[in-house]
Image (cartoon, rainbow, N blue to C red):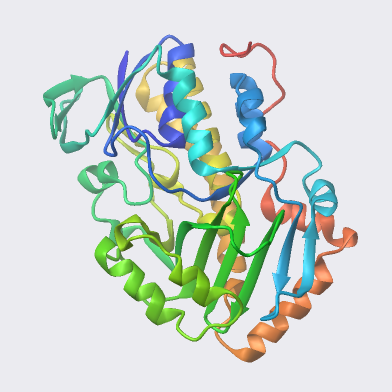
Length: 394
């Protein structure tokens, strides 16, 4: 069996790894050129960490752990009103936890497959035709080719989903917020702290990247409309939205790179009635984006890839395999989407009263007594059964 995977991010690379281990030939196409720019921090634990351990790549990830000892919710003077320490985080997660840059995980996943899997960078699909016995795709640079199956692992703005299931607007649930990020020179002396400063309708964040002298600046702001912002307009939008904001926000904006280098996206979830159609399936954010506030997007992307590969090996035919994959993953993704939706409503309060309420809530729940509640909120446990004899086990 030969499977085309559209998308060379975390979901696509994980799927390629497990398909190869299960005797299925994957081919990956990725629109971006080799080596991505930018990125953002992720909390890597639970199911994602479990799968990384089964792949034998944890030792390659650990040296790149972000040097963060606490998450501080600060006022305009930089004084912490509430603090989530690593000690409390350990009690919440009760298992391995690695704060990483998103691109670090992608890089290690690519290293794990590149000697055995064909990965075509700078390539994407432009048309899809299900021929019943195969799926035929037109590639932007590679002409027309046929595969047994096509899997869209191409993220929240999935081209595969658009071609096969319909336009993004049908499936996107906008959460009323946008996010943006870029690296800046560390001239602030924050050390090993992730700091959040919030005013009504907007929030600025900084955290260490693990690269000496570099911080990541992250901005969250309320927005009534979804949709993409052209790269050339992103920095102007940030500067107008965050004009006059306190703390070190003005300096972070002054240190911004060229507008084209600013990562910006709407905060939205993807909700589809079905994750597969004919010989085409979706995995990761393409079918079940939860947004970054879930803290589980990476884990569920890796879980979906693992479960899909397992089903394709063990089931008789792709129809049964796709149904098994969706049946195993859908409830887990839906629950995390629901939790993220509730959390997103209070993430960036729109009023001064809401901001006061958020501060009080943060001070209350950043205590050991609330660890079980937070554990359930963020799905800290692996959803996979204990290991027996995985094909990829070292």
